Length: 213
Image (tube, rainbow, N blue to C red; front, top):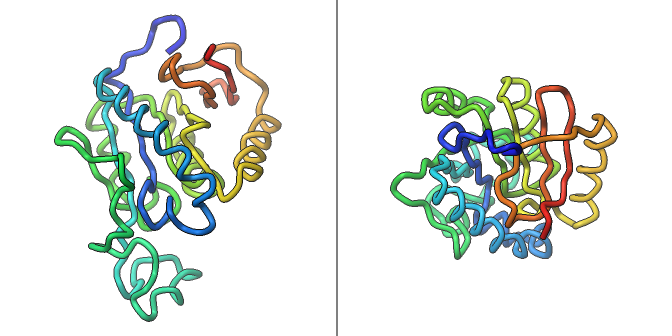
């Protein structure tokens, strides 16, 4: 965090939906695969600093009984995305859950919706979140908005460790957030080694900064 005030043991890294069926899907392949090395670097750095790493994934019932209504028709023949126990639901190559990490299964865009994530974070003394993964307009944005509503002190999105269907959609999401909030002068950062950061500050603004790479 800026000004050397960060307590890493009060910070958690949320790695969202970095699974074969999402990162390798036709609508995300072009932009999602390129962020895998940055996500891996972020996870490695988080572990080094003692940041709580949480892997947020989808593991959907083969018949789609726990999926959103608008997606149920994709699961009528057991062929939908991220089915529990399938290769598609596994993390992409290069990412691995380790012993001290935590795995959380969600059924909607937000990692907080109808899950015990908030209880896990509060019970672990977490006040600050760093978010990476896919995809920006859906699961990333909704998780960030819910974290803001739940009054976490800082929510940091590493922009070059997140992706959307196209770079243009990804960019427009951050532009929209910048227009909604006045720029802050200070904010947390995961590392000077990771370039673009978009930060929500409880004073009511998002902050986009260049780390110096």
